[in-house]
Image (cartoon, rainbow, N blue to C red):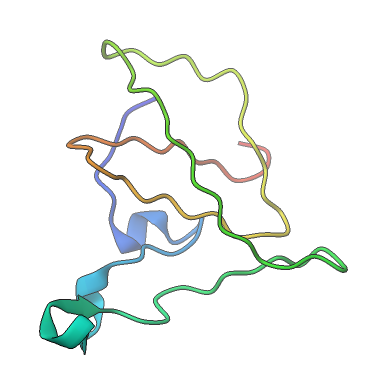
Length: 98
């Protein structure tokens, strides 16, 4: 598997790339911040479920090789990756059957 740079076109089969700079910001916090609203939908299509946001703090990978043994499938809900304090970040995605 070869890591590729994240682009909107390359990622389109798997979902959307959310970028703060894609739309003009609004002023927030008395002019001390910029805010980008409604950049991506938050969906949970399971009956009786509501959309939620969870935060995971992941340990960094040591080395340059990664063995992927299994992937999660989110068929009914959105998932958002937000690298925090990371210079390099890898997300492995696949369509069903790949």
